[in-house]
Image 1 (cartoon, one colour):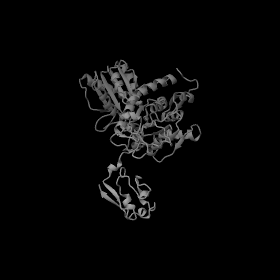
Image 2: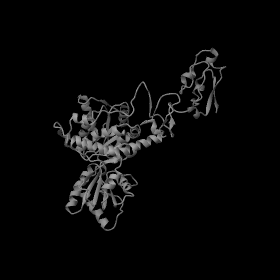
Image 3: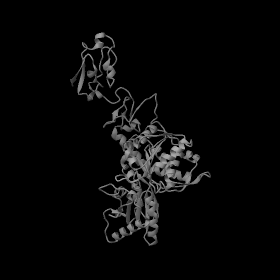
Image 4: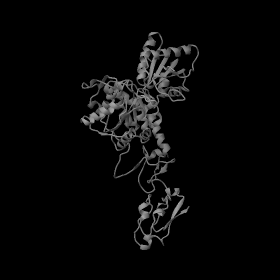
Length: 93
Length: 406
């Protein structure tokens, strides 16, 4: 069955989770969270949340403890860069 | 014939004919940047809008790139969009010319054919639109101002049927600034001919979509698990649309003739070509000039005829094979050049004839670059010369430059 079945005339997709495929496969390094250092984890509530604010892929939910969705995290390292507690470290895949 | 009693004859330029055509099509968004010789198109349309004769958004922009970009946005959102340009302005649009076709937007653009710089030259040849021939636009050439008006109206119907943009090409100054009698249809006639525009994808805030998002090499499943086009499948569909446009162009032309009593031809138009042994091929107003040369040649007993390339993209391959089947000699007059090769019409025509039953010798000519005048007697002389060569057994000669004094 060919792609004609999709019925699209031009390129389009729905803005939903995973609409661009498993983009986590693009990652060359992964963020590892040290919850001993994470401000939110230590406080037990959603304070700080700089990683949630800055993540361009929205793969960090606003919750305690934070849990990064590795299916779609591209490994850009912005969370490591913005974390004021230095609780996130990028490690090679 | 469905001629309306209220239709009227006007004495107008090609530019005015194009603007009037756009107005009669009730274009909803116009965005254009003035450039010689296209400027009077923008002036006329802005006058229509400002004086309330046309209910449309006229978006002023700082460049041709922005002008076509505005049309892309408007057409995506469901508005009938129109622009016009010439030469360097068309080149400045280049990136978004490809975008409009790839996005399958039925935008209509007037291309008032003008020479490309350097050096600066505002006069006519067809290098500008020819340089954009591979972008996925339908390109239609007009012979006179009546055809400019009629083609503009047909262009929207063609574009909105196959979902591909259409370039209405006509020669700068020779048509753009020359007044001719033009029969203008009434608004009611055009409304009956051209239904409102319906985009291929309806934008719906309740069901948001990413349009023309990054589309990589391979097809992939969408969120519903349906396999969607990759880049290559979308490009196949664009090619399919251009190929299918042949039938649409002919059908729309016939429908137009029934409704308005006038025909611009289908993919080609012909003049005394039926029994011709020598066929002259050209596009635009040059093809009209060639008709006069044909009359003169016929008076001296040479069975000559003209086959005008009305539609350049999609290229009329089958139609040319048929039209040139009985020709002993074909002369092509290109007003542009693929540097390092030959005239683009000449190349395409030869490719179309390859493998056909009769493969007449084809003599290419470059003519009229940068407004160099082309007289009927020069076309006539070139034809006699090519015939003499043929009689002498010479069938392959390099491209001739007509009236070039180097």
